[in-house]
Amino acid sequence: MRRAAVAVAATAMAVSLAACGSAKESGDKADETAGNKGDALKIGLLLPENQTARYEKFDKPLIEEKISELTDGKAEVVYANAKQDATVQTQQIDTMITNKVDALIVDAVDSKAIANGVKKAKDQGIPVVAFDRLAEGPIDAYTSFDNEEVGHVQGEALLEALGDKAKDAQIVMMNGAITDPNAALFKKGALAELKGKVKIGKSYDTKEWKPENANANMEGAISSLGKDKIDGVYSANDGMAGGIITALKAAGFSKLPPVTGQDAELAGVQRIVAGEQFMSVYKPYAPEASAAAEMAVALAKGEKLNNIAKDTVDSPTTKGIPTLLVPVISLTQDNIKDTVVKDGVYTVEEICTPKYKAACDKLGLK
Image (cartoon, rainbow, N blue to C red; front, side, top):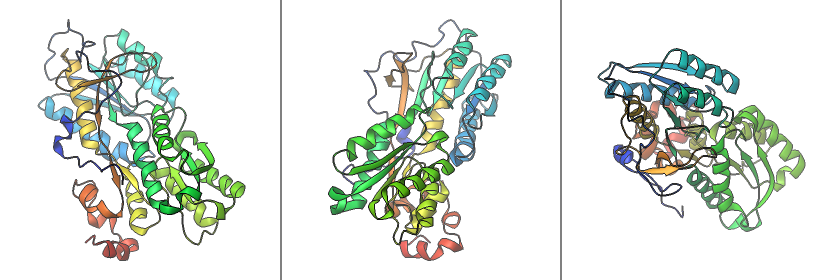
């Protein structure tokens, strides 16, 4: 890889990448008139969907654990999942306001549609932390991964997989949903690497990130371009990669072209082990979840964010949002043991089920 993968350990919480503008006095948006409410807080947590494994398996328990740690177990986390429905998520915000939460962590289904809900919460004195996706409206703090860098890493990996054939290669781009601002950043980073170096035969913005929609799009690309004219596939995440690979297999590809991914989902890691998917982007969830929890607890207590958010970003509606961005890692066959296994995301036993045992043995995953 031309960009060295960044090893992220527990100290990653102290790492923040450059963002829009220079860091100003983080926490200017904290309610300085609010007194210290103590540890008996009520923190709302709204996650966008449950089809992607990370939200229920990692983000929710990690955030709950960190909030408990920060408040000596006295805080209550009120949780709801929108199941990819922006209208439902708006209703969930109303419920959180009714429940008088002291702060709200929100991963938006639709970054624009949620703006009014964020304003309602703010009007009721409830600070809002945008988690993973930069929601619009008067957001008080934001934490995510460096999403443009995710696209760079994916694009570089695909070029690496294509090797000397890249200059004559044609690829399909399977981007994420247009309602997700992260998808635009992934695409921007990937195009910075791919444009002018490979031919982009087809490009799709995949509705709701659904694997079945990616599968249908890939079937359309194969029909339009011809299976002998597809040399690689940029997939913005692992779920879609699964749908894409199913379509490629059904079309009778004798050898699967390299396919990218993101999120290091178990199924994605297993496909990498088997050689069906070239790579994924491993995003260490613990630092991101920890930052969201710290921000929410601090804001609920009326404290500033100087020691948490060292940078700022601008959304279309709000300038200078205190921010912490976490680095990402390119996950391939070469570093599964040193990333997701070492960090305790998955055990070797979870990855190396009987179906994948031979491939695991070949990679030294034992």
